[in-house]
Length: 312
Image (cartoon, one colour):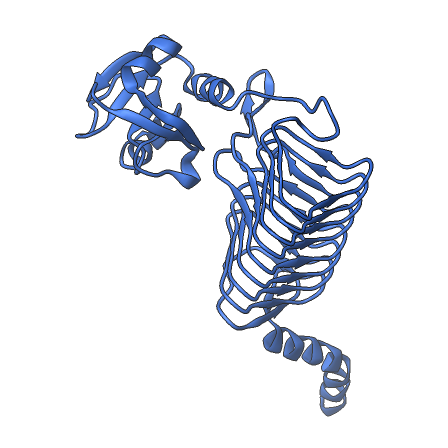
């Protein structure tokens, strides 16, 4: 998530009541959780075994709950509860804005776009030219749609990330500071759901088409000209290449990378990265040609055992 303008680190320290260590001239340009860090970002760490990873990350400002030596060119903000401070900053700079009208007054709608009755267009949404938003679709706050995008009835674009921090009191909800971006000529089927990012953007690449009832998790990036059949589910923080095809009920675990032109066959369960240009099947998914050979071998097993007993 980017800030509208860079924020001096001393100003951030004052806002959250933190002790500042390190370079006091730094200006933060964004805030991100660990999977999406860039130079200029704020992040947090509250478990000592992860201190090194956070301090050596691209982040420029680290919220931390213990005094330690700041690396060169970084600033540390010492607070009792780094997660709360992080979440409070996201709330401050990406405040919640509920929908109060069918089309928010500050939404930008391009020429030739059709929005049917019952569709809700949230605050700060930008929709390009010649789009078609069907009845009862929901386009949540800060979402961006390119030109010639179709969102069918009942689809929900920009819902909250399913992302919680476990504490002794229970699960604490993260503020979803990211957005959903649908590039040009994307088609979204009826009753699909696409979660906005926790801190970065969930992106659906140009020309990609979804059947009905597809679920895309937070911060996932999907390439161009992909085809996803009904009931495909993709968890958060995945990176999916161009020209990928997923057949019905395929499921993708979190933090998976799928290379270009992969085919994931129906009901496959993907739990590891997939290589370019190959087809995969099964749960756990493996190359389809290997999976089919194994299935054929299993079918022949009773005959093999019968023949073996007869020889004995």
